[in-house]
Amino acid sequence: MGKIANKLREMLGMHELSRDLKHINKRLTELESLVAMENKWRGHFTGKINALLRHAYLEDFLAEDYPAAATANRFKLYSQNEEDGIVLGLLRTVGIVNRTFVEIGSGGSGGNSGMLCNEFGWRGVMVDYSKNNIDRARRKFGINPKCSFEHLEVTPENVDTLIQRNGLAGEVDFFSLDIDSFDYWVLKGMTACSPRVMCLEYNSHYGGTESLTIAPDTDLSKAPKGFHGVSLKAWEKLCAERGYRLVACDPTGTNAFFLRNDLRPEIKALPAEQAFRPQMDNADPMAETERTPKDLKALAQEHGLALVEV
Image (cartoon, rainbow, N blue to C red; front, side, top):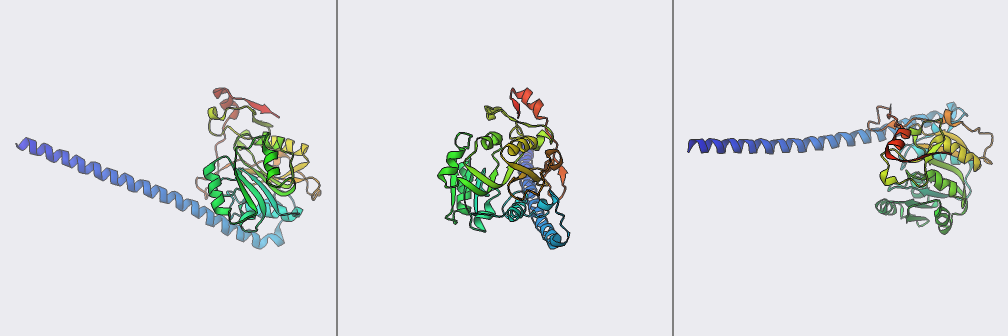
């Protein structure tokens, strides 16, 4: 009987220990989540304070040369990487004509046009492949009756129809493209509108010298993480063919900014090699460390995918 009682006590003790470990693990997970959230918001507030400090001195000290003339204006209200301030600065520089935008790849946050829509009441369209994202964007920005929302996979074949049915054919003030896939081919197929300012996401893993993008028939279901999009050099070449010039990349190495050549022609184009910024690791917004680049050519070979030199 004593042996049975001891065994029961031993089992109960293990049960108590197991329960305690589960509780400890749960609390550790909660603490890790809180730390990540604290880092995120610390980064947000730090960025806003830095933006206020820069803006206090822009009038007296800002150089006229690009990219500094664009990037010194950066701040964020809705955008991910302080594109809001860069966009406003460039629009102020070239002038606006009709307060319109096209945002392809808006996510749920409104992408780079959320501020234009929500704060300034501009007319435009937000498009995203994810229904959940576009539903979130509609809830957030639907108060503006001049903004429309489309759940759509944008392709080279349907991009012009999308723009036309939303009444945005012709000249628009701002165009943003970020779909993490066939971005190059979508812009190449787009002829319906003529933006004054363009914000185009580039994939920094390609580096700043090679003109590459994924093949237009790439099976993205087979593509590893990071294998998508277009290089900055490829954007530079395509946009030059379309009458645009590169003037800046945001400091996080995410987006490139282009002006139409007939607007403020005294602002010189930047070569991709000079404008290129590597992607920064935003896991810790205070660290400002460069993300480890991936060898996309090796990934293409490993997974039987194709890169195209353009």
